[in-house]
Image (tube, rainbow over all chains, first blue to last red; front, top):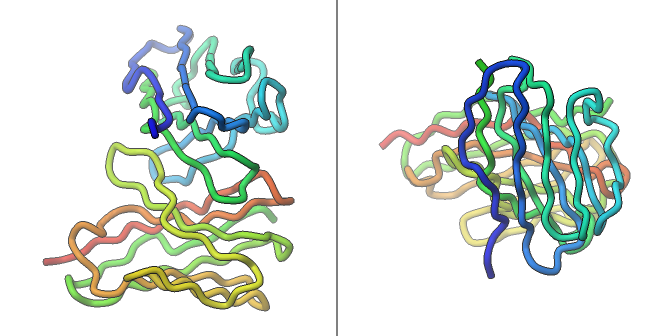
Length: 114
Length: 110
C-alpha cells in the first residue's frame, strides 16, 4: 500500500511569511495527526483529526497555526506568520484506529525560518 | 507529568547487544511502542507490546515491560551498522494522544 504522502519535502521562508504543508494519509485511515519535531527532540502533537473533525488541538498555537481536513482525507497545515522558532520538521501520521496498532508516518516537511 | 524519558545516546560495537531504556507515565496505557527514525525520514513503527505482557520477542528485538516501575526496554541482538538510528519510546495517554520521548541516538561502531 502507498504510504503517507507529504509535500513539500523542504521549505525555507523568511520570518513573518506564511507557509502551508500538505498530507495525504493512507487510504482508509480515519485518524490523521500533525506533529512538530524540533531538532534533537521527539515529535510533539499539534492536532489530531478523526475523519474531518478535530479530536485534539490543545497544543496547536492557534494564533498562527491552522489545520483542516475538509473531506476527511487529505489535510493541510498552515503557519501565518512564521517565527524563527517554528523551524522544525512537520510530520503527518495516520492510523486506522486511535493508537491500537501505532501510526504510519510520512517523511515530513523540513521547515527553516530565516 | 506527561514526559516519556529516555537516555539520549548509546554507542555499541557491531555484533554486541543494544539495550535502550524508557520510563513512561500512564499506568493505564494499553500499548507501548518503539519507533525508529533514520536520517531524513519519518518515524517507523518498530514494535509494540500490550500492557498485559511482560516480554515480546520479534526476531532480533526483545521488548521488556515492567509495569510496576513503568519501565520499558528495547534490546537489539547482534546490532548491525544499519541499526544506527534514533529510537523513540511512545505511549498513548488516556488511550489516544500518543506522546514520544526525546529519542535515544544509537551509534553502532564497525
